[in-house]
Structures are given as structure tokens and as C-alpha cells.
Length: 343
Image (cartoon, helix red, strand yellow):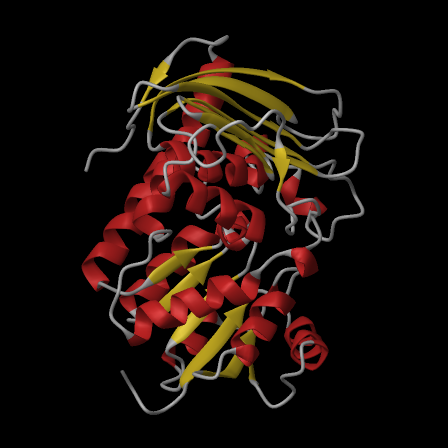
């Protein structure tokens, strides 16, 4: 460990960057030393908004990385820019948090994974719902054997995203957002992988009604896990509804449905689902998301030389599953087996 504070930087001045800055500010081992964006006025405004007016402003990512005060950087730019930025940060020896999607095709994922492996920097991919209290409860219950062995797992990311979203100009395009799963539904894929293990095979089907998207806005897939369990994962960014993030896990000793538990092991004689009072992932607003937990985890990994369980290496598997779902949907539901990237 080090006695000095780690210098944190943020590159990308969109909606989510505010929460990254605030999370670094709340960590006692960090100080925000730089804020960057392709537009200087955007970076300046973001620094002031997030309470870091003394941060150095950069419009060039390479120059930000060359700042010797910077130990860790959050990459919060649009998704189609992430690959080159992650590789640049790794080659500069900077630890990093990367917003999803980290990459939009298999070649990008492979290049990033290999660059991070070579540099041996610590990374966390911003699947921030891993620090949501309800999902943490679910993971703890699974680890305690509350529902036995999972034989079915289901996850849904349903969030109607339209032109109210600041990232809409890139997110609805194939170049920028690429697909419903890569733009948003990867959160559901990541959560189900966390609970059920790696995915071995998918069959996807595409639909949706909002033709402003350059890709199908709603995609659903049947999945088979390496454990032998089966399930379903869906992503809809054109749903006409409040935000929904659904988790259903069926086990040999019970069932978990979001924050509801039925467990023969923990509660013999139980007749109905027990509801656990907790904070659910029931909002798409980034202010609702637990970025403090994510950044605290990253800083702990850096200071104690530990690998994160949600690093680039792990996130590649989530993104592979998303891409496999899209490939299957393009082929009319033909099965696609994983992995798609050689080790």
C-alpha cells in the first residue's frame, strides 16, 4: 500500500461521469486531479458540476495519460471509443474503470484483453449493479446455499431509452451503440453470469417497434450455462414502461425472484415468498446506481494488489455472450456456442 493519495482522472464528460468523480471524491485514498473531454467547455463544466473545480482540464486523452499525477482513470466516453482508450491507458500503466460496453466486436474485446494482460494494470468494468444491495443480497443467499443448485436463471433489462438521453445521438446507431444488448442489456447478462456461471450456448431472436434505432431494440435469448442449467435473458430499450430489472433464479432447494425468497433450507415450513426490504435496481438514473461501491472496490484492488472479479478479463465473457445473442438473432435463432474468443 501507499501513503499518498492516488490521483484519479475522468475522461468523458457525459451523464455518468459526474458519479465517477463524486465516487473518487468520497474515497479517502483518492483525489481527483484531472477531468477530460473532447470539448474543453464540457470538461470544465463537468469539473465544476461535480465539485472538482481545481482539476486540470484535458482535451487530449494521451496528454491526460502522460500526467504523472494520474494513477487511475475512469473511461466514460461513448462505447465506440473505448477500445483504443483502454489500450492507451493500459500501455501507459494506468489502472482504470471502464464504462460498458467496453467493446463492440470480438476483435476489440481481444485487443483490450491482451493489452490489459500485458500491462498487468488493475481494471473494473462498470457493471455497477454488482454493488446494488438487492443483487448483493442475492449473491450472499446463493453462496449460503439458500436455494441449492440453480437449474434455471432469468434476467431482463427493460429501459425505454429515447432522445431524452444525452447519449442518444450515438447510442441509437450501429456505430455507437451497436445492439440492444451491448448498449444496455449487458447489465442483465453480467448479473446472470455472476449468479449462474458462464454461458455455453445461446439462441437469440430480435424484435421491437422503435425504428429510430439502427438495430433491433428488443432482443431475447434462450441460454445454456456451462453448469447445465438453462435460462432466458432479454434486453428492451424501447419498452413503454418504467425501468425494470428482473432476476429469477430457480434452485433445487428454493427460488429467488428479485428481493423475494423461498428457501426450504433457511426457512423450513415457509408457505409464501418472504420479501427482503432492500434497495432494488429499479431506476435507470445514474444517481441511483452505487458507483461508490464500484470505485471503492477498484481502489482496494489497486492498493492491495488484488484482481477484481469484474475486470476486463471477466467482462469480455459478458460481452461475448451479448455478441453471440446478436449473431444468433441475425441468423434467425440458430444456436451459437461460446466462447467466441480463443484464450
